[in-house]
Length: 243
Image (cartoon, rainbow, N blue to C red; front, side):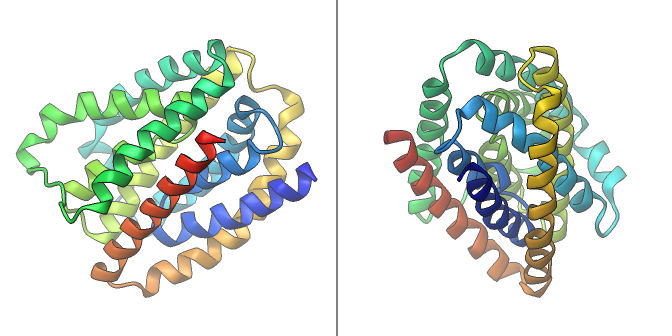
């Protein structure tokens, strides 16, 4: 049953990730947490996320340019990831799920309105440190750094390709830090490598299909899909956190 649940979670999450550039841990973590404890679910899903983000970051070029632009965001996010992973290790599993649910409730409330957050490019130097730190802590604790980052990148008004690349590059760096922190705290062990590789293999197939869908979406429809998927994920996580 656990193997089947992992395969289903990987298929769904991989397709979502390929289509809109994010959402893999947001979908897969609560699904796996139905059958295994959330801390193990987080650890198993980090390596597959690294693989998918690595592929997506390199797709279309411009990775170095993106890295330079968001270097401060990445640095503070790395620190936040270590702190958040430490909280994951020392806090009860239900706290992690509660934080994840509560955080997404806030974004669902914003998504339900027609208000579109907007950030001027000149504000990046001031907002990058707190946004990066917040995303890192939330990501380390819940395995989902995407909500603050996606809102931030969406508010910057990035084009589809730039948006997807920015998400992939930041997620990749955060996940490297998270995997290192999990290994350091003993939450990721050798025994978790086989299931992690299995999830990665299954997710890659549906991820590739999702990329084809992404390529067919124009900018306007892409923005709509992003908001719709975020709203659905937020509702699902809210329900999952209350169970």
